[in-house]
Amino acid sequence: GRGQETDFSLGEEDKSSSSPFAIAREGEKVIEKETLSQILELSSKLKSNLEPTINKFIISSEDKLVVVMVEDWEIYFNLQKDIEWQITKLKAVLDEKIPSEKRKDLEYIELRFGNLAPFKYKD
Image (tube, rainbow, N blue to C red; front, side, top):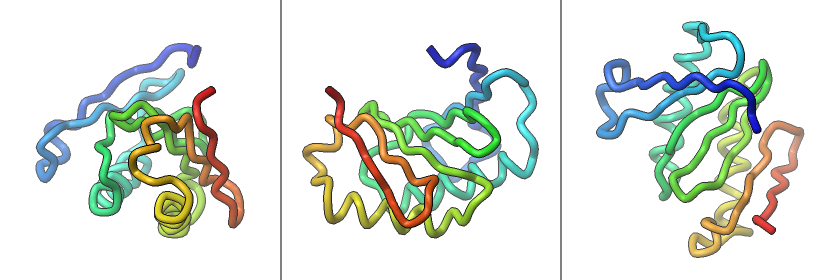
C-alpha cells in the first residue's frame, strides 16, 4: 500500500483539459504552488507526447512523482531534475522499446536516474 493518499481534482485550474485529473499527496495535504505548476506543465507536455491518458498524479516523496496512466501503468518522474530530459527519455523508450499494444502490460517506467529509463512489465 501507499499509505494515506489525498486526491486533489484540478478541474478549475486546468481549463485546457477536458478531463480533470487528480493529484494525490502522501502525508501532508498541502501541495506547494511551485510543485503544482510543475505538474500542470508536465501534464500538458505529456498530453502532447503520449497516446494513453493520464489518470492521476501521486506525489510520493520530494523527488518522486508518480504519473498513473488510465491503462494502469506508472511513470516515475523527479520534479527536482530536468523534466524535459525525463520526457525525452520517456519518448525514446516508448518509441524504441515498448510498442503501444504492450503498454497495458507495463508496470512502470523509471525516469529519475541519469541516462537510463528502466521499465518493468507486470508479472
